[in-house]
Image (tube, rainbow, N blue to C red; front, side):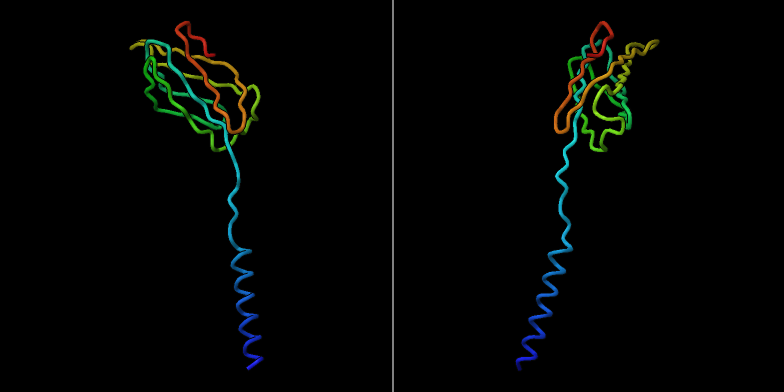
Length: 119
């Protein structure tokens, strides 16, 4: 009887050890996000930065949209080139381009302005 009790105790302990050690631990990863604001008379149709191309979009004047950059930042967090394309008229798209700094877990807000600058 003692041998059988020891055997089952050993089996239970082994199963518990395997069960607890094989559990996946969630990664505590946070990513930056990007909010794009439109102050131009057309609609923003795309936002591009290294590793991301958000298209097709339809961000109208006075509206904004936030994007999660959950694939990470392949070019790093500093001086990241961002290009915003706005469908301004039937004949013309306008582009706003600039470099921005991002921080993990924080939202960077950029605005396409009427004078075609991206700030």
